[in-house]
Image (tube, rainbow, N blue to C red):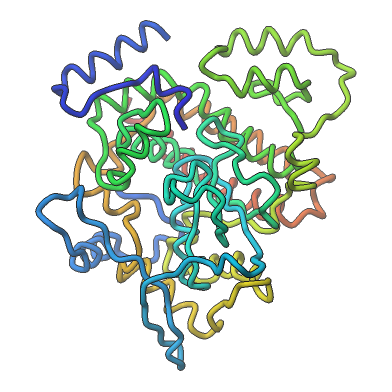
Length: 416
């Protein structure tokens, strides 16, 4: 989480102009929220969210009560505080993997609601005093540079979450802003209570966007390739098979820029045999997700419960987990998404900063984004992937993102 943020270090007490000035120095050195289906009035939904919030005068102290669900029968449910998994009993453990800003929190809130047990994170920000504590769910962005493989061989399966990079990249930046571009664990932990409370200024966003976009759009697709291909080592920019030396360079983005990485990849022999990440050989053989879901569909009232069901199906009958009845699951979704009975999530950023739709990309950046989406679509539409259900589902999501982004790009060009 902290490797690149030394380029973006700021201090909350600085005046806004000082923060923007520092971001510009880094550059020298280095509407409506999109939800699938669009079958409901987002403005009315946001008003309902606001009506259900309970805050103190200090927004940093406000955190909605964590709650889990109880099946009341006939499709009804009630929420009570969640509990930790029994540490003395066997437990089936699930990894939730996603590019930063792609809805890991939305996913784990749903899974907590379905099972009644808490979620951990790869940096152990949720419970630093118990590093070996067992969690039914663990969230990570590995192998993105914001994630680390900290769970050794304890995870039993992987669930993959995806979101349109048009929105996941700004959301990722919102998180960096909220933790003050933390350089280390201590700084991130000191600011983790601020997450999902505000967005940055547009000036701050533009400075970070123009510094990082060219790399991050490649990280977005590279992340998907890693999990779909079971940890196969590929180059970040060319997507060619690579060797361990190049992989280690990629995992140090603060040390190597795009030009340097492309130069080193050009030196990798073309006959290099496929190599798999050691974690995917020793700790989690295969590393392949058992299900994929999209943030957009999970948030949409017309598709949300069915999208959550993709993940719920992988938990049925697993050791140490009791999943609430299928009849009550739509109620869980409604309690979390409509009635806002979970922890803070993306709509709570409306408390501070510009609206989400104000965070835009340039025409050339939108073009590059669409190119990467098309690369992913073409790759996983190839005949060799036709029998892979994850690839088939991924292509459906990516095709929709392409259409949405092309429409926005057309509008930008018309208004240019």
